[in-house]
Image (tube, rainbow, N blue to C red; front, top):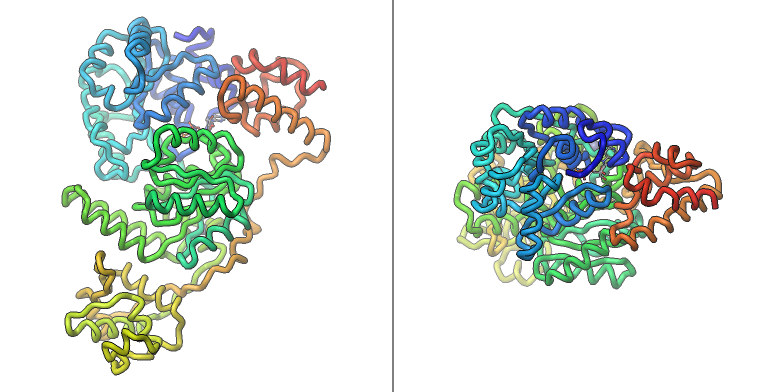
Amino acid sequence: MTNFEFENNPIFVLNKIFGYKKFKGKQEEIIESIIKGQDTLVLMPTGGGKSLCYQIPALCLNGVAIVVSPLISLMQDQVNKLKSVGIKAEFLNSTLNYKEEKRIVSSILENDVDLIYVSPEKLNSTNFLQILDKSKISLFAIDEAHCISQWGHEFRPEYTNFKILKQRYPQTPIIALTATADKITRQDIIKNLGIKNCATFISSFDRPNINYSINIKLDEKKQLLNFLTEKHQKDSGIIYCISRKRVEIFSNFLNENGFNAYPYHAGLDKLTRKKNQNIFIQQNNAIMVATIAFGMGIDKPNVRFVAHMDLPKSIESYYQQTGRAGRDGKDSDAWLLYGLGDFVQLKNFINTSQANEKQKKIEIQKLNNLLGFVESPNCRRKILLNYFDEPYYFKCQNCDNCSDPPTTYDATIDAQKVLSCIYRINKNNMNFGIRHIIDILLGKDTAKINHFYHYELPTYGIGKNKDEFEWQSIIRQLIIAQYIEVNPTHLTLKLTPKANRVLKGRIKIQLKKEVLKSSEKYKKNNKTKTNKSCNFSDDKDYLLFNKLKLLRTQIAKEIKMPTYVVFHDKTLFEIVIKKPKTIEELSLVSGIGSHKLKKFGNDILNTINS
Ligand code: ADP
Ligand code: ZN
């Protein structure tokens, strides 16, 4: 075990080892629950502080804590961070050689390590379980526990065998942690881990510092450039794309336009991926253009925006990916662009995937939920939170629909125009795409219209009161409401049986009036808090802050860690304000534990005195 004098006391561990003053949210109750030996389920949003919930009990309890984490690439980061505060932690996965593995296994057997991070494959192996049989285990922590559930959005078959833990080690507490889980996923976690009497802690999933904004794809490159130049000229952020090809396109495009962008996708070799990830973590203005292969477990506090160039596949994915913005609590943006093509492509992915029918149904349902969200005229935050079963009764004033409420109107006649146009041109078993239908409505003179004599249709030219953009929006909404079906291969449109009722005038249709969001609309809402935490009234303070930052960079280089692992900006800010004169005074600053105090305390005091 790591040799700290105050091992059994969570608050001491928090203060002296991690250097934090107070527990965040429900951390204290969760830690107590685990220390009592209670199985525990923790739902906490990204950035909520889940790691400490098992790391502190791991130090307070006797024995080795086994932490399962799905991504090998991130175990190393976690372990490095723990080592940087003087805790004995290691990881076990397929990247280790025989000698290293042997050394770590001995440390488990001798109870000479506090935390071991393992891959799910490792935890499933009989060999490893036999080692655990002979060791003193303090707890099992199952990170990203939603991977257990088929209903969850990142199902992993390796996660389904963990029931054996409770059967084999009934006395050892299990803590399952996740940032995204609706009711069904939660039930699945409890069932599949066999922890039906667990204590459940659900924190609010609200991320008030994130501004949500969702836009229709028009000229995607230009829209992205506008968004970045107006709001994030020198910031770090993540841009998600649906395919490797699009990752390359947008990362090249941004570099050509003077941004510091790096690609990340499974088609790049391991070394390049690792290199790009490190640059992203270390630099303050790096943009990662990535497929969803990137991001799980990345703990970079100053990600100022997460942009989606394409639709994600579910509300869970969207919430999890956007959750990577603003972990430091400062204003951040979640910005998404989507078009009808995305929807069709995703649906096609699902239909042609290897998954069984039940799984496909679940995924289609999730995609439909997401579409309901992006098309909704209501507060984005409210929809997100309600989706995760959290009541929210307000308008957040920090999303596009709150700052710029869209209007809805009686669109029955417009809908009838579109539907009857499709009905007429499909009569001879010929199907056409959205473009052609809009051309007919607008009464255009195109080769296709002439070829098929479509200028003779009664619907020819009946939509001249609206422009192309408005008709696109109407048709998209009718597709989402399932009055129209899109053929995924040919992108042609067909009526669904439901459409009949609209054509016969039996139901009224209410649609959102789509207006182009001009770049004007990106301007900040006055009501959002701006974070002034790093504004100094005194130039000298500003100078000291910069000197401390320089010191931090030197230390980071020396110990080969990202700067924020050394100290957060918040910690430096507090040092500038308090200007501690002694080591004792310095120890009271949030973010400086005994280990860092001993190692860097004098350097910090010297910088202040200089
Ligand atoms: P999660 O895994 O829930 O996304 P982390 O465990 O990575 O969150 O914690 C997010 C950030 O909050 C980290 O930078 C962590 O150091 C910080 N943090 C956690 N607990 C506290 C606390 N009690 N006081 C101050 N900062 C904390
Ligand atoms: Zn809102």
